Length: 454
View 1 (spheres, rainbow, N blue to C red):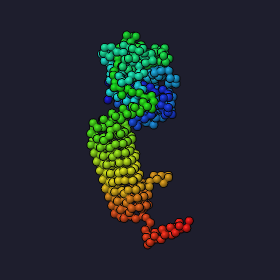
View 2: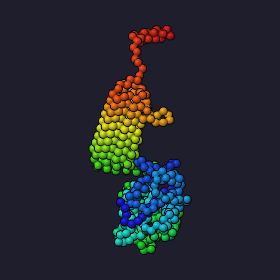
View 3: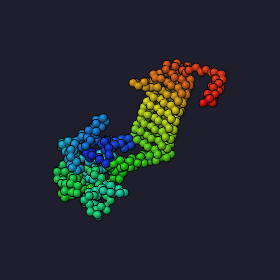
């Protein structure tokens, strides 16, 4: 998906975000497991912008570290004083001075706008009426303190006004300004130079370029988006509300694609969760990032899955935890109160209950008894455990890595295994049982006599 004209993006993220009450920059707070800024960058990536400029201010070091960590092709510029959105956009001028094309203005705290919406906004600049500015508008259920837009025929803008400066009649208008807009670079910079701060807040407002274009006799238009697409985040409550919006839409999409959610409102997905067909997901299941679930999988209640892959017709839970690196093959079973980390469980293998498997491989058809643990960490390094095909690990066994259990081998219950076990062998690694006849009866009699003397 690309636009038919070259364009660059300017993302505004210089606000202090004080209402978040956080040491973390607002745009780095996660939505469905991905920072708000990550959502915006993901939106424009398929449109292939020539340049992406990020305007930062307070907390810019955090943002720049994130860009570096993710190896993102973004140019940060700094707005040292927060003098308004028009002033913020102007900070990108030096980075885009040589660029000739369209520019779209986005916000780092408005994460869910869709690529097709941005594409529509940009293409609107090149329709027959040749508007100078295309503004992304929306109609929220509660307009609150959004700026209002008055339009005429063909969505041509008649007036835009900030809520603080609007009169009572203008505040009754339900068409609101999202703040996102598209404009040709040749038009943007001259208009920004003319913006004044003679308003209630004493700031340089970006929407004023629309009114200046109208004064010049040019056309400015609106492109309408769904309200959820342009919902911004100012505080943690709004972030939680937007999370609910996204989760609701994701659940609906997952069910439309052929999965069954027993109690949809209790299942939480991550931004990149992939769910196959004929998957059944019971209540209270949480998916962290990097999870792929194959067709026909059953995930029982209260399971937590992140960084894991589950192949077709496997069964997970209830109360299972799959951590990063867990790779569950087809028809394998991971049961209740089992934790799997950085381990491969091959086809048909069973890890049914009360077990920890870390840094390991479990062969096809193997059975891991309850209470088994792989002792993979000695305080300094991690070591692997290898369990062969059709091996049987008795309950309450400790496998001290590095160790290999051969194919078809049996580990007696309660064993502490520290050496490799050959194929088809029986390993018994526990203290020898000794029964002392009538010892317990004599013990009780002795204790009862002592107690009576006190």
